[in-house]
Every structure is written in C-alpha cells, then in structure tokens.
Image (cartoon, rainbow, N blue to C red):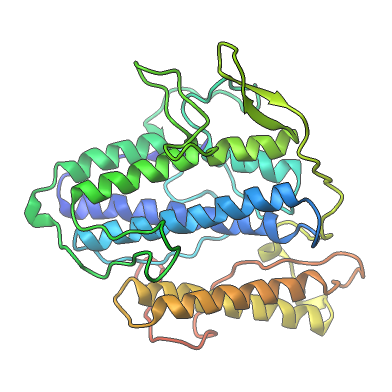
Length: 353
C-alpha cells in the first residue's frame, strides 16, 4: 500500500506542492504498468493485455487531470521522471519499493500494493499490516487534497489556463479544469478508478468505479489470482469465478529493473535498442512538459513519442543481451538533450518544466 506524507497546506504554494505530488504519483505508476504490459508476448494473454491497457490509459488521463488542476490554480507543471527501483513520490514511511517487472504474479501483486484502498472489500492476507503513522493512502491523500482545493478562494482559480481536453487526447474522457467543481469531479474519477467505491457509513464499498467498471486494484487482483471477479448474492456482494486463462510463461525473457543493468558488455544492437527507448521516452517527457506549459502541438508530439517508444520497446524486447537469452525492455530513463522537440529546461528538482 502506498502511503503518502500529508502536511496541511498553509497557503496556495502548499496546495500547488500537493498537486505536484499528485502529478508525480500518477506519472510514476506508468513505467511499471507499461513494462508489465509490453513484456507480454504478442497474440497471447488477451484478457491481461486488455486489463493492463485500460489501466495504463486511465493512469495517463489521471496524470493529465492532475496537470490541469495545477494550471487551474496558477501553478507550474513539472515532469519529474522517476527511477526504478525506488519509492514512488511522497511515499514517506510506507516502505514500498517499486520495480520494473516483466508480466508475472509478482508484477500484479505490486500493482495491487500501489492501488490498495484503505479498506478493500474482503481483503486477503497479501500484505503485512502497517502501524499507525503520519501518512495516508493515495485515496486518503486525494480526499485531503480535495478539501484543500475546496478551501481556496475563487480568485485562486485561473479558467482556461493551459488546459488539455478530449479534443486533444482521449476523446470523451479528458476534460478541462476551470474551477473547484471541475477539480472535485477529476479527483472523484481518479480515486474511484484506482480504488473503487470507498467504504462509507452508508455503504460497504465496491470494487466498481463510479462508471460501474472494475477499479485498478481489483483488475490487478483478477490477474494475480487468474480469476474473474463477479457479482454474487453473498454478504460481500462479489465472488471469484472461472479463469482469465492467463499463461504466465507467455512473456519475453525480460530482465527486471533494466535501469540497473550494465549494457556496456552487451551486443551493439542491444545497446542501440536501449538508446532508442531512452530517446523516445525523453521525447515523451519533453513533449508533455511543453504541452502543459501551453506549447502549440505539444500533445501531438507526445502521441508520436508514445508510438516511437512502443516501437523501440518491441525492438529491445526482440534483441538478446550478452547471454543470448535475456532481453531488456525500456528502462524509462530520461536523458536530457537526447530528444528532438520543443525547448525545455530542467528545474531545480531535476524535473522538466
């Protein structure tokens, strides 16, 4: 379970810092989820591919919505590329270290650990209980952030400030943030799609989102168990039935945490493939930074970079390393200056603004 340090905001700058943590969190889930999806062999495990694809798409939307909130309150969006293995942003005291893992039960359990609600329905004994501390879950973090945004005066909101909507990306799913009502809607969407409908005094909670779809935590749980979660007339309201047909052997022989791998002794083709992955990922980060700073055409460049990253990943996953067997998926390493695209600058925190 990700637990995030929360400090009550004292001013608008503190609220902006909390929103930046939200942006960093959403960004940081993408590489591990993508790595799991990319390492599934083509034409295999369709149920897992579909679930992972849906999760990745929604996480991209969540990051965009968090960026829209930042711009709506007059802040500056930073793209802070994470490193793996390592804790996700704001994970103070949680102790969860995130890895880039090939598609496997361990990768699915890690996804569950990231998305775990404070009170999952019928929770299994998969994770050790943690004592009370000064940290909160991601869902609780967003609830507190929602309260902080609600307390801002109307003058803090800047309508139409560098907003990205569904005319540019994810038709019918992404929307502009112009006031607190929009931000509240975005936060409800982010939390429900990650954790499901929360436990409340009026309800026992549900694995479904407000859109009546399975939340990320439960999609990962389905894959980890290789079973389908269905409605059932029992006290919990849901039960495990049937099989997803997952074949854990249908995966590229990809190494975990390629950022830690020394490619200097690998064949030139493997080094070139990894360099192409780094360049495409760097172009994506640069394009997103430009997009949320108001650059014209930035989202189009980001979409192109996503395609380039996918093609570079396919190449890397089909290029053996020195042992002649293993391969390396994209390490998701940001390398300044390797990507052609809009001018950007590094901020003091090491991100791209």
